[in-house]
Length: 376
Image 1 (tube, one colour):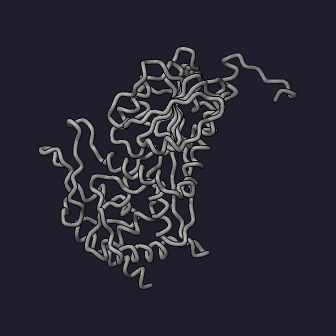
Image 2 (cartoon, helix red, strand yellow):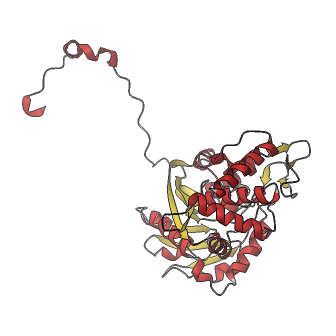
Image 3 (cartoon, helix red, strand yellow):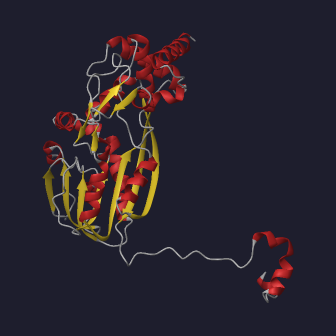
């Protein structure tokens, strides 16, 4: 009861800060959608309540794409994770998603000679591929240390390339790649439209792009708990969970960048934890800690304990464990080719549905006779 009263007090306090009514289920996106405004004249992203959010600005790249994520910080986080002696114990989620994505690659009926894996990491997708599905592989990642730890798929020539794919041209010729894969790495890319355009450029006609990416409901429980706890303890909150894409965004980007026969599906995974502290430890071990430019670099101990209490009160399972949600969007998009199936032309009916009540008259007018009893 006391915890629920605390939550209500924090909601009321937040309404006073922002001067708009905020429903509880909307608070997961409040830090990025409700308390910020775009100052177009100076090309910066400024919060309305600057005293309650990080003072770091989200900058623009030549006015074309908004820079949300600090790629240098993400590189440092990834390199630190790669040097962790317990690295294998943090691979459980990316290993599972990589396996599910590789299974989609195996569903392609023909062998793809040239494969490019973007954000390959420790080979979470490539380790499950075989010589029967691909001819040779180029693994690309921001972190050299992670690539070094990736096992090579059996009997498949592998080239490992260290580069940042965000906002740059991919080092491949036009129409030279059969398949591009990517698993749980693109949610840290600032300029997704440019990257998708580059992927379409390098794919051969009838080539395929198969990927997986965290969706908008990922870590929603942790997001809400931290925002409520920080508001109650410190009088305001900062965005501690990075923004994620929605499924409509992925479909829109694929369509705008000339992909066809698009399919998108989703997985909702729940991982149980005893408290938020092993959850945050796992996120750090996966190199999935926050890398947004406007992130807050420090969390007070009192805020963390309050967040754990709120998390437990709002989301605890009957057995006392805490669920952590991971929403994953998978997509398959093909580069157009004349050999691909084409949709049928729209058919025009000679009979209107409003004439169903006089079906016998319509049948006689069009010369339709009764079917034999055995065919009915």
